[in-house]
Image (cartoon, rainbow, N blue to C red; front, side, top):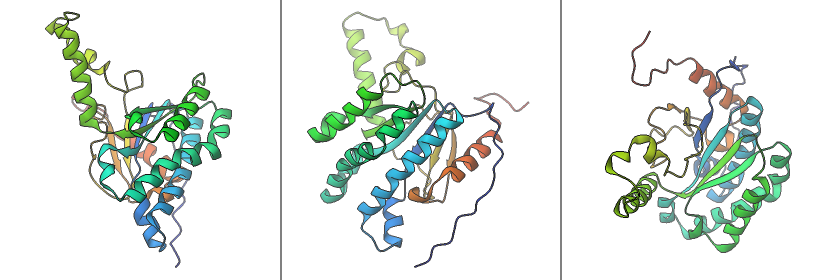
Length: 249
């Protein structure tokens, strides 16, 4: 089966207006594989290549942080065989690309509930985090066994415990204070959220952090999302007027 080649275009990007933090909902792996009469797991395999490609390009462009939605708390509803395969992907990904990411000064992090993953998966991800902890380039964060509502609930519990213990007063609880208890506390605010495959929803991904982000929903299936699509998204982002609740000048 032949697939139409994607249009290549030289998008003009203002290097003085690069989004500090880009978040990706990596959608379309299964459909990409189905089009090729391959199992869904093949789509996930190919999708990891896109993470590597975009991380290196984002790092080159000067993006400070890139967060990818790797596995949600709801994804446990999928077939057990698919879930098991996804849990094996970190080993494959870091075996193939960690050296290259290290050479490009990329730092690895995660948000979510890594403790719910198999022990081997936990060790592999933690090893990558430890090995790259001193890197000062792009922060590549994997949202792994992550749910946005759960993150807000967990932050609320921590703050309530502090209030109950008399560590803080009620008036201490501001938006800024609350934000410091989120898993993304030391990351830049998300400027741009990109979802691939043409779906138009957030799927419980970073609901607090995306409050003032620019959204782009791209028809491209994730394994086909490349540097050209990233440049296009950034060019669209740069063409928007970000008002943060203000009025157009």
